Amino acid sequence: MSAPSIVWFRQDLRLDDQPALARAAGEGPVVPVYVLDDETPGRWRIGAAQRWWLHHSLSRLAETLERRGSGLVLRRGKAATVLATLSAELGGARIHAVRHYEPWWRAAEAELAAACDLVLHPADVLVPPEQVRTGAGGAYKIYTPYWRALQEQLPPPAPTSAPDRIARPERWPGGEELRSWGLLPTRPDWAAGFAADWHPGEAAALERLDLFADEARHYAALRDRPGEEGTSRFSPHLHLGELSPRRVWHGLSGEGGEKFRKELAWRDFSRNVMLSQPAVGERAGAARFEAFPWRTGADADADFRAWCRGRTGYPIVDAGMRQLWATGWMHNRVRMIAASFLVKHLLIDWRRGAEWFWDTLVDADYGNNSQNWQWIAGTGIDSQPFARIMAPTLQSRKFGAADYIRRWVPELEALTDETIHDPGPDRPAAYPPPIIPHAAARDRALTAFAGFRAQPSCAG
Image 1 (cartoon, rainbow, N blue to C red):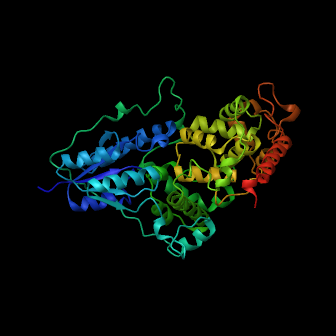
Image 2: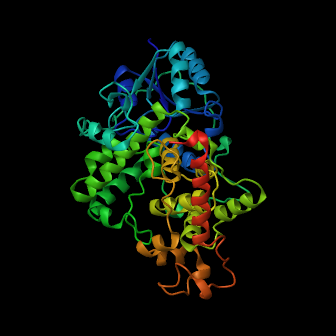
């Protein structure tokens, strides 16, 4: 008998619109595999909050595969080595996988391709970024021209359905038990509240898409208002691939759908950025910012801890940081406000914030997370100017965050809609004063930036 095919699952934990699985199933018996690889990503191994999600997503994926006559083999170690070994065990099995763009996955794909018959399939993007090139054949560095070029190749192909049955080989390879991986936190179980907000797995993702398709007409109007349910909450489903971007694109229509489709395009752009700037999570896109005078030392560390714990004295910032800790997620508008506050009010290196988000977000995504932090910090190739400094109190009022603050900062729940954004003399004793006044923070940031620009290496 010929060897079965292997399907290597990573951030594509679904059967719907899964071309690697569809192709393998069309060839004969299939061995679906997930490898928990903490070695290849190095410092970018899966963060703590996302491990919670991964545990439940893998459990759901295994159940779905079993209902179709298959199963899921779990192994742990360096992915390229583990898969090459498994391929040999199965008599030289071909490996099918969805192509991913994180630098460590590209390295793993190259290593595996040198040892095995590896077939990669596009399914993590609307259009493969290597197909969206400038006239000179290079990668786009700025979003707007990228978006114009991307539109020439849209809409994406229609999504495909999951196979009804998946043939299982007579010889099934051994694997590990999911519970042995210790993905769920214990002593303490700091993720105890996650289940109230999230339902990992492909079935829940598709159900959420159906619900949002009816709500999308309100998306443009409500997406920036943290006190109202206006966002899609697709991000963790998209990151771990429980939902394909093509399925989302074709599942939405109308004005709100068009607005959200542009968010999918931004996600595609982040894959383009990972190709052209693999170190986007570690080095400033605008290299001159490597010399920026970020604050360090004991005072900066204390400020960073206050930011992480939601104790800055700025209600909208603290609400967001507490929501993050309690649920593994933060409203997008509040992410921008909280990130800007860390970088510009506190003058703390954007990379410290990005690392905290990486560990605490269930939707932590190297491309999106890194690109968005660099955009808000002004350090990226395509980003807002550093001198554009958000005023948290004004943002809070503008986007009607009073009820959002009441939910996450209960010390302030008795304050009026007017005073809750900036309590002033109405501030309860249990709630800290501002860690630094806004005007003083703005002056400090602009002074630091002016001095930085005056340095000879930054001239011009």
